[in-house]
Amino acid sequence: MSSCLWIRNGRVIDPANRRDAVGDVFARDGILVDGLTDAEKATAVVVDATGKVVSPGFVDLHAHLREPGGTARETIASGSRAAAAGGFTTVVCMPDTNPPADNAGTVQLIKDIASREAVVRVLPTGTITLGHKGEKLAPIGTLKKAGVVAVTDTNSGVSNNEIMRRSLEYAAMFDLVVCDHCQDSSMTDGAQMHEGALSLRLGLRGWPRAAEDVVAASDCTLSQLTGARIHLQHLSSAGAVETVRLAKARGVRVTAEVSPQHLLLTDAACTSYDTNTKLNPPLREESDRLALIAGLMDGTLDAIASDHAPVTPTEKDCEFDYAPVGAISLETALAASLEALVHGAGAPLPLLVEKLTVGPARVLALDAGTLTPGKPADITVFDHAAAWTVDPSKFQSKSRNTPLAGRKLRGRVTHTFVGGRAVVSDGRVVV
Ligand SMILES: [Zn+2]
Image 1: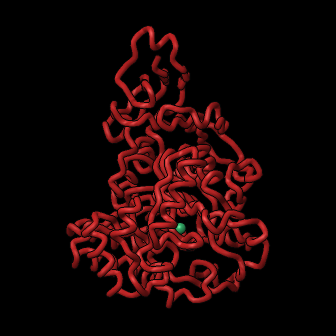
Image 2 (image 1 turned 180 degrees about the horizontal axis):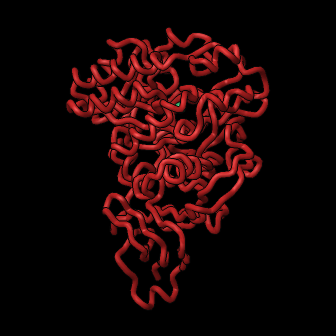
Image 3 (image 1 turned 90 degrees about the vertical axis):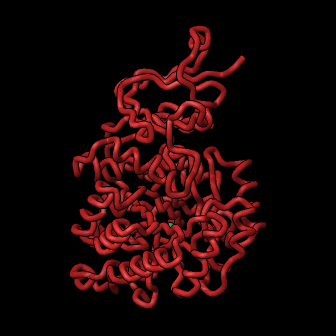
C-alpha cells in the first residue's frame, strides 16, 4: 500500500506556479500529486494547516556545515537538523572544510556522510582554487563529476582577476556556476566591522563597503567577458546591489543573494561588542539594509541564503578583535526575513517565499523549490505570525553564535517534509 500525505486548508504559496490560495497539498509515496482517492485519504497522514502557510521546502544556497574537520562547531547531522527546524529541505554546503572540498575524495566523503546522517538534502560545492588559496585552479571537471552543484572559494574569495576569468571559463565548460564572496582582502586587513562613524567611535578597525563593491564590479565585468554565469554571495552594501542591478539590465549573467542577518540588523548591533555580531561581510548601515530589501523587491537579488556559520562558544568568548566571524542562522532565517521584509517593509508573503524556494533553486538550476505535481514532496508549513523568543540553547545546531539571542521574532516552522517524510512535526524535529 502506498503512503500518503494530506496537508489541509493552508494558504498554499507556490511562486513557481503562481499559486497563492487556501487549499490542500497531497503526496503519494514521497511525490507530490494533484489529489488522493477517498481510500487513500482515509489512511493518509493528515496535517491541518488552517491559518498557516504551506510552501515548497526552503532551499539554502550557503551553509557552512563544517564536516569534515570542524565537527566541534557543526556536523552534517546537526546542521541538517538545524536546517529542517528552519524549514529548509535542501542545503548547499560550503567547501571550506578541513580538508577542503578541492578534490573528488572529500566531495565523496561529504556525500557519504550526508546520505547516512543528513535529514534534509545536502548538496556539496567544490572550491574554485586548490585549498581556496586563490592561486591554482581546482580540478573543476573532476569536482563536477564527483557531484558538486557549484564552485566557490567562500570567505577566501579569489583576488586574482586572471584566475577568476579562467575559473569562469572552465566552470562554464562543465555547466557549473561560480559563486563568489566579494571581498578585496587588501582593503580589509585587520578589519573588525563596517567602516563608518560607529567603527570610529567603538575603536574597531573598519571594513569599507568599497572592499565589496570593487569585487562585485570586477565579477560582473569578467562574467560579461566570458559569457559565464556568476553568483555573488551574501551582498551587504548598497553599492554592490546597484552594480548587480545595472549589470542585469545590460544582460550580464549575474545572480546574487543576501543573508537574513543583513536584512534585519545594522552595525548598531556591534555597539555591545557582542562577538556574535561580528560577521563577514560585516553588518552595515541602515541605508545598506534598505537597499538590500529594495534589491529583493525589484528582483536584483535572487535569493535569501542563510550563510549559516557555526562557531563554538569558546571561540567567540574573547575580545571583538580576536573573535572569528560568523553567525548561525538556519533556525532563525525565516523569522528574521519575515521581520525585515514582510512585517518591517510590507513585502508580500509570496515574495519572501520565492526568495527562499524557487529563487535560490533557479540560481543553481536545482530541481527543487516548487509544489509541482510529480516533484519530490519537499514541503514546509509555517505560521508567519507566531511570536517566539530566540533561545540558542534550544537550537539543533551544535553552535550558539547568533546575534539574535533573546530577540522576539515572528514566524515559526511547524512542519518540514522531505520526500514526503515528516522531519519536523508540530515544531519539533521528529527523526
Ligand atoms: Zn559563508
